Length: 251
Image: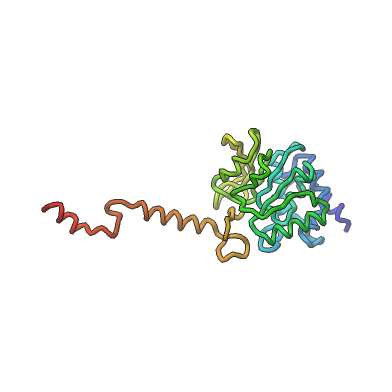
């Protein structure tokens, strides 16, 4: 079947009950124009509302992508940073809204950066800048940004990303660990909350796809345990010989 027809059906399904996750007409037009099969690689299933896996990362379903981009609240002339470029599909949809040169995307995984660049070029969006970076650090060379989309979960938005927003900018990210909700945050901390979502945690160097350890939560648990151990005082310190200490004080 013609991919354009499949895209029409996909977007119609996102706009209509029971999903109804897409209300922004300009965003709907953008999703109708982006050839999603260039990013997924399987034309038969590219337009089904389902996730895919490519190079160890999750390619968002169309409905999840729509939720993120609706929350981003793009008006059409913003500069946008996408943290977690993945295969490049979200960046392409944003490029349809704001223009290729206004979209910057970063990912901690070098293979994904190469994949995203290739996909974007094949789909006609070679003007989107994609670079290999630690997402928590953002892209300060091109800041400030009107919109930042973080496609990974965090308990709190990274400070560096908030600092790279314009004064009236907007950062959208999945907030939480096990129980997550989509949130939009301003540079001053004002927060708007949306639907429940489920994303992998934000990765840092050494935790990217293919690394021995990818679970940032496990790493943070160890760090917190170490800090607690180092902060122990008094009776919690196992190495204090209390009998000897008491005896020396009584003499």
